[in-house]
Length: 146
Image 1 (cartoon, rainbow, N blue to C red):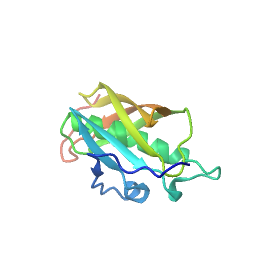
Image 2 (image 1 turned 60 degrees about the horizontal axis):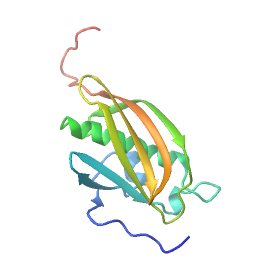
Image 3 (image 1 turned 90 degrees about the vertical axis):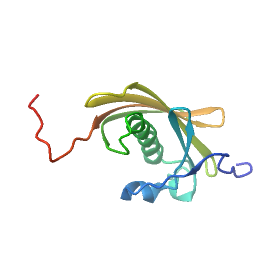
């Protein structure tokens, strides 16, 4: 490993209150037009037995990248729930690497929404993922039957 990267300019720590996400952070975010880029620095708590970022951490990051952008597209905060996440691991992320996620959204309206993302370490692709999310509904409302 070369020199430990720093968090890139413009990225700030996200205030995520979800218990699981707070355990794997910090996760950083930066607005890029209408989209939100997310990233994290691989630390010792993210490593698997092989000494690279655990697939569970990378999958969690992909889920966050797609879900937060789908929610942001509708000003919904984090009120979307993952229905399906498909992940392809392309290459490793090492201790100290800055891993950055970029989302592409396919459908952001209606009850079911679709998106994908890529995770990068500099110019090296680490992961590709696609996901399906459901928009949460107000639990006080009675929903029509499908």
